Image (cartoon, rainbow, N blue to C red; front, side):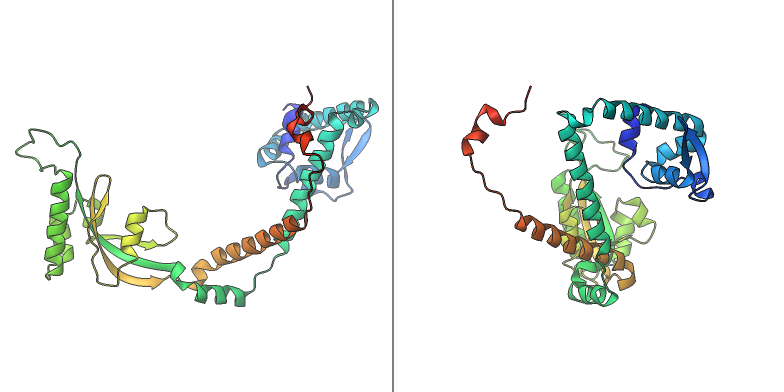
Length: 294
């Protein structure tokens, strides 16, 4: 592991299992004559990525060798006063600001509490957001380039206009009293749903599905059938079986996350509004003086 890799890895939060096995003040290693306690090592491991922790568990000695190098070379840089020289001084100052910025932001976000009453109130006020519809489907495919001489013994491949006409004809039969499931088994090309009596899925508004399908499904009441919905390779007919809302216990975590994020965003906005910036010398920003030093 290179020195630069150690610095990069010391960014995420996790804890090494072996370091937790000893009391914090237990002497667990010596580096250049300096005693290292379990508590110090645990604190170091707590900011390492999981992969770095695995490296520690696989080879503690190799890991400590690299830490020793980090200590030694850092000490050399400080004796040479590189931390007080440009551009290192500015880089250290900027990194310090970034670390403290993230620390304060995380502390604020973690401190935000959303009560059960707030969750319930939000749920009731936004119940439509958690609507879900269980649907059955009939799918009629088409090809933009059907073969000029189709196989007389095979299934006819429809053009887009032919598929649309077929879907509209099936819709007419259904609205005239035809059995949706029976027609699906006879004509639908979605084998999975056909095997399940045309059952497609329970669709939620948060699902990542095409907007046209989502709009068609959520415009239906129970028992209604959609107009043909065009997709790149075919037309769908959807029938709404049940129109309900996700239970509160299924969406509580989502509501808490949204509410916390909204409050955090408001805090960020409030802080930003208090920041006062005034450009005193516009010419500076137009000139080469604002360009990075070479």
